[in-house]
Amino acid sequence: MTRRMKKMVMALTLALAVPLGHISAEGEPAELNADTVEYDMSTGLAVATGDVLLKQGSAKVTGAKATYNAKTQEGSVEGNVIAVRDTMRLTCNSIMTNGQGYIRAAGSVRGTDGDKSFAGEQVDYYPHQNKYIKIPAGGTISNADGTFSANYMEGWLDDEHYVGKGNVHIESPAHQMEAGGDNADYVGKEQGRVVLTGNAWAVKENNTMKSNKLTLYLDPEGRAEVK
Image (cartoon, rainbow, N blue to C red; front, side, top):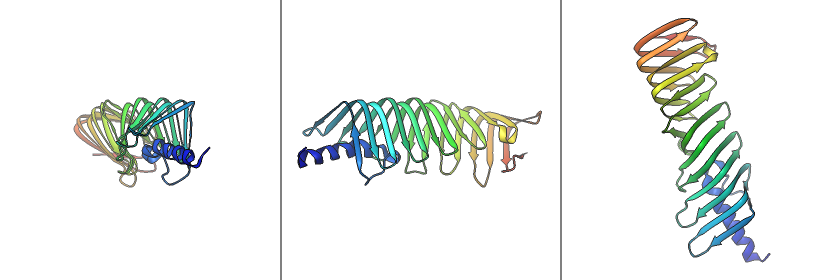
């Protein structure tokens, strides 16, 4: 392989790997494997198809097809996508990025990051904003405290701060509690608090509480106080 060809392959590999944001590790050696690779230098469009494997540092992404436009910085991977880096693992039907720190995963999205996880049909993800995620069509977010679901969800994984709207449901085996309402604002870590508003209810140890607003304080030892 000529020196010029090696440079082009490396540039193409980086172009397809780097846009995945948190999944890639910019500046580290990159590798691209696929059945076919096409690169149009005039349009800046690169396309890899067939058993696509992107590797860079500890990051690995697999799928059926990957595309990237060097001029617009837009990229995508589709077809049984699996993306892994360090403690983060994401599976979905397709993933795309605008190259500006925004990622959208669609189709049976499942993600884990340490003891946190999330799921939905569509997840918008901003890895550089305290791992902010938005699940506009409804889904779940889980951590050590339990599972949090709603018709619309958003949150910051690094801060353990989650907001749910519409048919909120919380299950917390750790606190032997179940709760719900129209809306919820959960703050984990040191605060350990969830505020439920609108038809709010909670059940703990066979005791049921109902109110327009319920504030539940959760401690690390599994106790829960209600106001």
